[in-house]
Image (cartoon, rainbow, N blue to C red):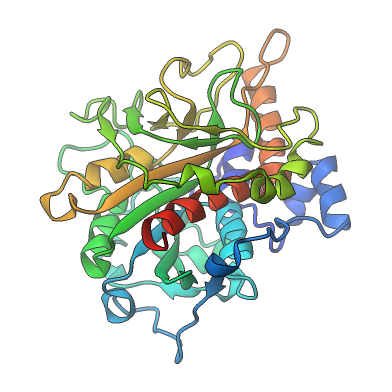
Length: 381
């Protein structure tokens, strides 16, 4: 069994809005209210008629041991997310009628991963009853169509910061790097998008805002601090023309209205899309979030922090992948958290976790819409 996660880590890794577990609901009055009202998933949005995302199930269902090359070779795009809440939002908006509970298992070549996933907190090794579906799994996936674009949606079962033991040895194989390399080799997509929740950096980035990055960068201070890439920066691809124009208030405002009522820190009714040379996504090797006191020293590095996107940038440096367009898109599922005495960092951590469990799925709607806009602009315009 994996080592127990902190409350905030547990929320991010395991909170599932499709089936909220009581251990989360009991700790957040706002989440309890949402569960009682049946409002734990994003509301449908008014997609343009010619590019409505539609589920594209496979018949017969693929085997969990299948290579992705068997069904998806040459697909236009892969969209990868990491947490249960992110995947639930992606399913609600991109595969309506097919929640994550109905997505396909991905355990191709799983025997090669079992000995290399050695982290004490790796969900991959967590055999708890509520994590059963992700135990010794590379993740879940489901295909969809966006207009004429064929898109493979993936919920990763591997996580950069949790899968390896610390300190990292020189010959360590990074499981997430291995999986993503294999996935890209098998599918050969034209585009890859990594998306989902993140911590907003800076007081200007509000709950629900979207960071459409121009760069991903590492800020490794713990388990990967001695790696040559501990501070590496990777440029993402240029946006397809008209992508930003497609992200309209009519789309983002549907679920933004819920974020504008968030407690104790409200967001914008129409989320802001951050896209500039400063729109970095910062990948840390510890669970971190921005506070008013800059506890984790993130301020000035970018607009959002996460725990994996810069590794995607590193994978994309391989020669065989350099023609793939790639984008990193994050939503601020928790904003900068006030952290002035007597409030402790542990109290700030709990507050960030409660905000995530209650509103993270709704903030993710805006990054899903942004992902849709990039794909639609690239393949349907």
